Length: 295
Length: 283
Image (cartoon, rainbow over all chains, first blue to last red; front, side, top):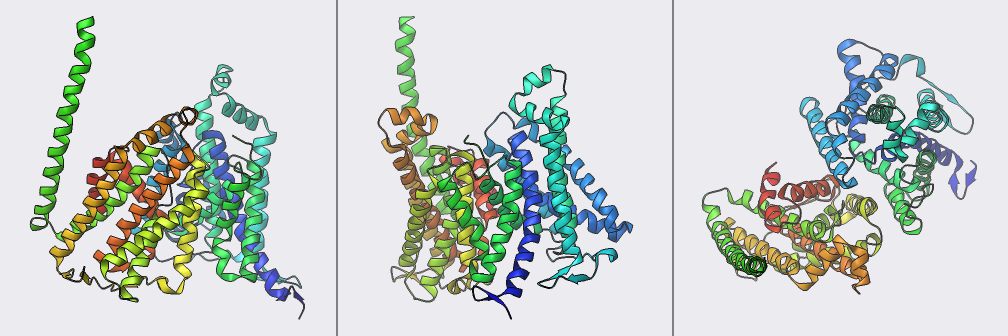
């Protein structure tokens, strides 16, 4: 068997693949967080809970209504997005003027509420969600066995990430958004409805979390706490990438997933803390993050 | 006009004196209530309130008077609980030494965290403390002496100073009350000392405080370590009361909860956070 640095190549590529999949989720979630922080200045703690709501929406649609995975892929993000817009209109819009910390606390509170609601109704144990028939099975790529569904997740999340990046950096709507972050009053004077646009941005950001939730449902089980541990990692990703930097969070998300995979191969006990150590180092050396601008 | 301007400070001074005597009276009443309470309310619940109240007071010292929002205080609370639990159960130390050891652990941990974290402000400060406390969480999950998901159970309460049997609920309660009063006293003295005033100056306008010759970073570090130590004291006491130290004490949700407790009490008001955290503690 071929070995690389004393580790079987099979194990290495397997863990790297796993890291790539985790990284895809990190990228999708941190992208939404980053967009929200960049445009609204809100540290969206509730992101993980909304990811969980996305997964639960898919599960409920399958169980109660018989809507398949493909339907859920479309509807669940919409549901989460609308929920997000309601949250923005009802709570968050009062917090733009005050310190970032209040946004963090409010969204933390919402997280507790959402998680407890689902735990009360569905219990803390995971609920299984089947992989859709079209994506079952897998291919042996010679160096690693790739389950079709995981390949789909990676491809899909890359497409979504770059789609979002394109939307914000290269389209007219995106340019309005970026202008509104720079100077909301001036943009409003040009006749653009800024509050509506901000609500849409928040909706879009959390819809990405909802989408990630649906895609995660067949891989990880659907449970009320599935988001709460992930969200902390995703925060670390966003901070490392630079708060508000879109490209930064995509690249960092995938890289950190791979880093985690690598640590699993070489020193498994440290795999959970690798990301946080990376974050502490980055914050000490380059506080604005790898891709961020100095505040 | 001149009459008014002399009358005003005098009235203010009189008010201050009144205020001070009111505060003293308030303390006396509060301590009396604390002494009488276990005969009316379930004592274990009261001990929980006191432990979390002390935790919230410690946290309030940091956010209310230094303006630093730490999102990782569970690390101090939890690691002190673990160390105390281990010291009492495996090493068989008496409770006072166990609590002392737990508190010292969090003071050390607080110094390490503080050195890293105080270089940054606002949201970055919160994020660094969060990341560091996650390190502690995963350590607590994996180190052998913490027993992973099970935690340290059935921690013996033992005899305080070799004489007082803490298995008696009332003895335990009054010990916790004494610890709480001690911790609260430390917070109170800190806040009303020149150090506390300088701290508030730094919070309100750091650049100005530095230009006046205060070394802001050193002040922040000291208050961070103090707050960490008191959180550890709360955690150590908690593990003695419930005879249990588990992962729940180190999760980031615990860090978030202490923030909520403190803010519900109103940040910057020591008595508020101490008293009202009871409402959060029971939830």
